[in-house]
Image (cartoon, rainbow, N blue to C red; front, side):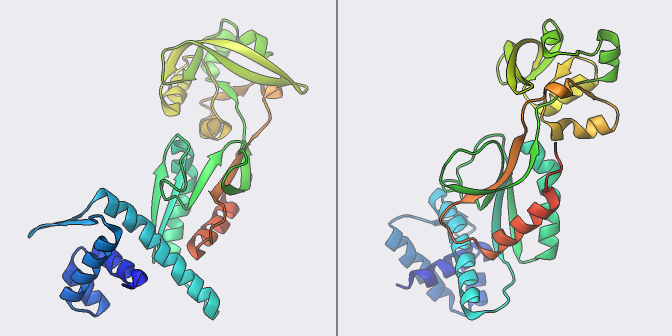
Length: 298
């Protein structure tokens, strides 16, 4: 069995939604297509598709195989174009991940323009506030806002953000603007957490020396957006990342304080699996993202 050919047939069946449509696209008979998929399932010793007289669905294993297989076919096409010297057009599925708020504000517009410019590329954008495994979850490229440890990923820095303290102008006028982190003791604070309100450690920098303040939250919320809305409403001081509060600061709804004591910036990276050939679509998206994101978040 030619496994590359069998993979091509299987991907075509899933994309076309039926064996007959896939056969028409590939210029083969429906019987040949059915036999190719059956042979592939026998080789893998697992069921990839469940078929009835009315519907065809991917199994869990089939979904994983389809996602990875479609990506593998796109990479193979890229390699062939490199070898032949052709000016290839990017195609296939590009899977991206980013923190929810950053991805919605900054990555989604890049992805939409990328899709318009390259109509053969489909994008899956996973907006998740957790660290995602590139290999296990089939990710091509991810935005990570962190100091990255040595790992099985490669990365290029495209900017930086800071932890800032902000509050509404009305709150600061009523309660006074803190001039030093020590003055946060006893102030109303808003924290983003998945547990009950409790003392939270806010870290600052004073001429290179680290200062840690235990802040008792009067309000704990589970999302940054809710915390920002509470801060705008005058509920207290909040400590978001600079890109999260920037639109509200620009609108005059929040004001940043204690800027002289902000800790060092946190880098923003575009990260991707190490040791893997980067498909054309990924390389092009990295170039677009670097140009669009470059360093504008501090």
